[in-house]
Image (cartoon, rainbow, N blue to C red; front, side, top):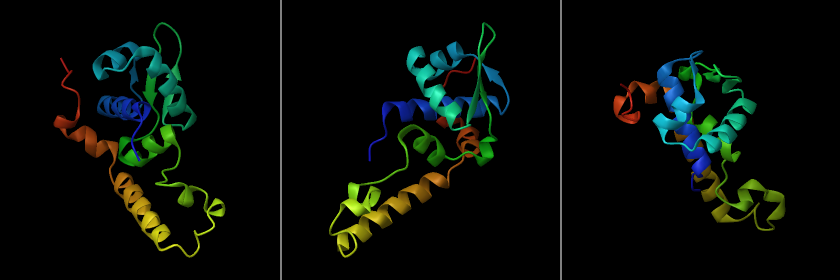
Length: 142
């Protein structure tokens, strides 16, 4: 599994919003500049994050994005899967009915275990933890 650019940018965006705080309106322009995300790409990412109920989008001249969740309850797994869908390492895990060998294949169990461990690792990290570590944030604060 390789994280997409959209996934990486979404993580940057949510990390920045988490540092700002839940419920704080932050302009799209500010997020794009401070997180080095192309503004048009940020708009697309924000739509996916809003669909997942992670952020709210306020339109207009004084609009922007608002973190809709407490960073303490928001995990890295949720952001990754909001952007790319549920994590699977191969097709036999994603669609077992499409794999003739799946029920008895010894490799299937290894893929399943690896997938579960990756998801558990990402689920164990919250954005509150990440935002509390100043080395994890872009060095953009004035």
